[in-house]
Length: 302
Image 1 (cartoon, rainbow, N blue to C red):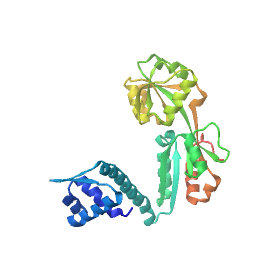
Image 2 (image 1 turned 45 degrees about the horizontal axis):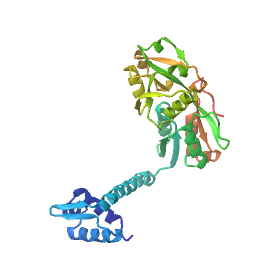
Image 3 (image 1 turned 90 degrees about the vertical axis):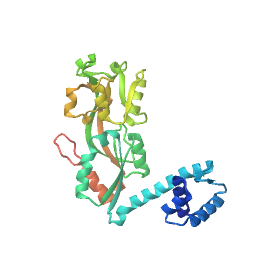
Image 4 (image 1 turned 120 degrees about the vertical axis):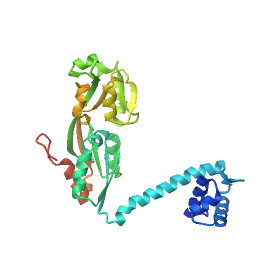
């Protein structure tokens, strides 16, 4: 393929402007130069990319396909430049951290703020994943660290205690369930649920727990975050399950919070890593920040 990045940028400009002259002006080139470049690009691709009209140009079907690819390619290049910029500015470290939704929505923001206060030149890529996916990523080396809640630890990883949390049931105040302080999950399955979106870890977890009881989750509304669940439950849209750490003080004025009498309701969040990851001083510093004891009831690192 005998074309270059400049050809792709010219193609994008002309396609978006639907006019060769305006596309040329956007690229700071002459119309004749742009026309020659586009002809070479079409020859290299082996098919016309534009239909010339009296008042401009229009992409062909092949041109429409190429337009989507070019947009993605150029966006990836811009992201690459953005990712590399910190290194040019003297970045000292780079960490990839995967965490489950529970940790990202509650504890991690404050802990990462403390880490950045001490290490302003370090950059962290933080991605939300289900706990089992995180374990696999850390084992494979795609992530330096993970924050997970798992029942069976992976033998190749080291686990350090991070936070203790609990899944609780949110119930509208008018609901008969609101008269209780605790309940079993089975007793909730005849109620409509407000849930996280399909594919998110907690949604998948609750659907599987319902199936294990021979029932199913009647999901009335799906949302992207715990705050939206709390607000919709308070409005009477249904009931919902969230980590206790996601609640705000004012929530109890608008809804009831019930404990779940299930062993899986307790969430033991842990930091998982490969031992060799600690060879990086910045990873070691982040682990220390996440696992340091800042209250008497929090277990010490092992």
